[in-house]
Length: 185
Image: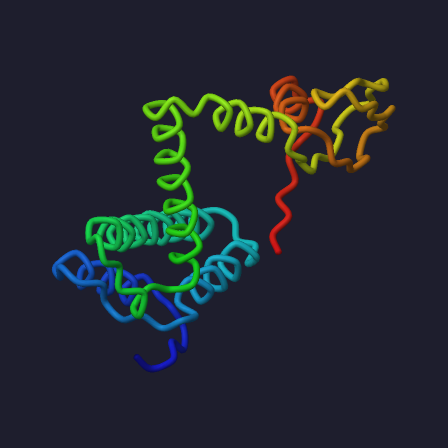
């Protein structure tokens, strides 16, 4: 497919329709989602008011809905077939599907551990998960704490960034004391 010059709602609508009407994944420009992101970013950065702002908002909402539909169609097609053809998947879709495969592998491992009496494996997985490190940014001050790995952490001030055990991070996130930071390689 040729390079997308600029995305617009009509083009996006036609692409979604084509994807919905075909059983196989359609070929898209490798920069397709980035083009949409650039278009939406440009729309949002243009400061309008009154009726023009309402039209701009509706346009952004339409693009969002169409993009969500397209992504759902494409991922459903890829997941439905046992032998995924990666050639027509975009990198962003591969990223999502890799996580899906990891989830399935983990589910299979846990089920296998349960039905095959591998309680040591289950214990090991649980402990590893409980103490795995999570990167967080503190939203409020916090005194020193003892992590689930029995190590001491802190004290922390607002805006401090730290790596702490997952279980502790989840508790602090739930209490809105910290926020998770995503760190991708």
